[in-house]
Image 1: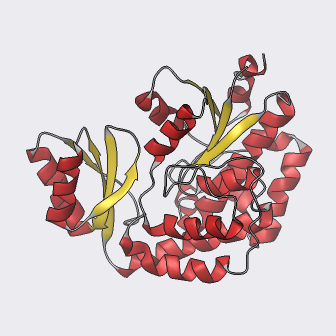
Image 2: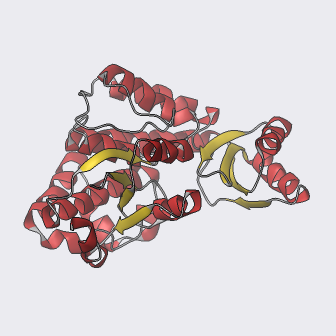
Length: 307
């Protein structure tokens, strides 16, 4: 018997055309129409047609990626109803997708939260010049040195060899230079600002006001928490607190994947645009089985999972 985990894409995976072929199914087309109604703008057209620069805006791409990810999940469940997921996880905004499939948040609430979350994060980015840099192959000691020397912090622990640092643009650029001098590969990322860092504090405060009025329910399957790398509490209020912390704290994706593996998960299915999570999983442990569902053709290739 196989133990499966469903995992959901994060920001940056968006592209014009995403989700369009899933909408041939009327139930999924209705879901996209519901998203338009809830948000009050044409999210469906932006997903299916772009333009890319509009789709990239945080308050649009976050609910857009969520909707496409849930469309992929629904299409998979309709095609392969015998596949049962033991656990869910998602990277950054993808954690909301995971919470939705675990029945913690309803579809409309998740959309509203993500639109606000994206808007607040963009506003925090506009407050000061900030950014992120990906560091490859650094030891914990080297990462600590880069952070302390340049006043930045760890944003994403993606694998044991890839960590992303966040902070003021001056610190990020200086850290990239220092990393090169250490013999490390460093790539300054093309992002709006220092996500998952203390520079997102204003976004966290604004999001707290929104979440105060949103109902969180007990999860119907275990969901891995970005901020701890372990399974969320079953207490809805503790889940809500963790999702606030997620705005300013490190995303411990590597720990999430190790926790899933230690719990016996042996098959990982990624839902949503792109293949970022599948790529990270291969970097973490190439022996683990992984599939990606982002369109109908990739859905077709998952037939072996239903065996």
